[in-house]
Image (cartoon, rainbow, N blue to C red; front, side, top):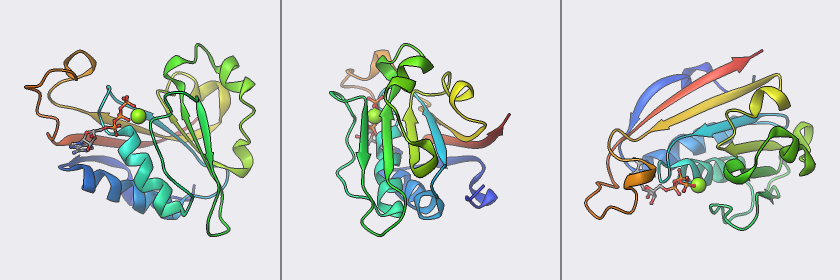
Length: 160
Ligand SMILES: Nc1ncnc2c1ncn2[C@@H]1O[C@H](COP(=O)(O)OP(=O)(O)OP(=O)(O)O)[C@@H](O)[C@H]1O
Ligand SMILES: [Mg+2]
């Protein structure tokens, strides 16, 4: 486990800048073989977190929601591990993830929507849940939604 246990637990993240900073601090500590799984409704901040993480890890950007590709590899700019950023939203199963041939041992891997697949692909990972106290998938297009509301982020280490 390469991340300071102090990051574990539940906290409120008030702004997207703060979400990036949380990702940055974690990204600074990650090493090859680390896996993180991000769970949270559309627009929760999964990609925002990953953008900060990428910067902390020192990989080439830009980190975007991988809408047209399911997995994108960001090479390191500093001689550390590359980041593989996966959007598992449209993946049906861990077998389909397997087809992507991700080199888990040599990469830091972040999987948005990957919670159900994680047990089939790894022995240990960080489970990161981002809650939006207001809104969710069905509300994201609603102009009235307070998109800037604070998020609740819970980070747990899972070992099976
Ligand atoms: N406290 C906050 N934490 C994170 N993002 C926030 C916060 N407040 C506002 N935002 C905004 O919410 C949006 C989050 O979008 P982002 O693409 O990161 O979500 P996502 O979880 O990856 O969504 P998707 O499921 O569509 O991939 C951004 O526009 C960000 O600026
Ligand atoms: Mg996203």
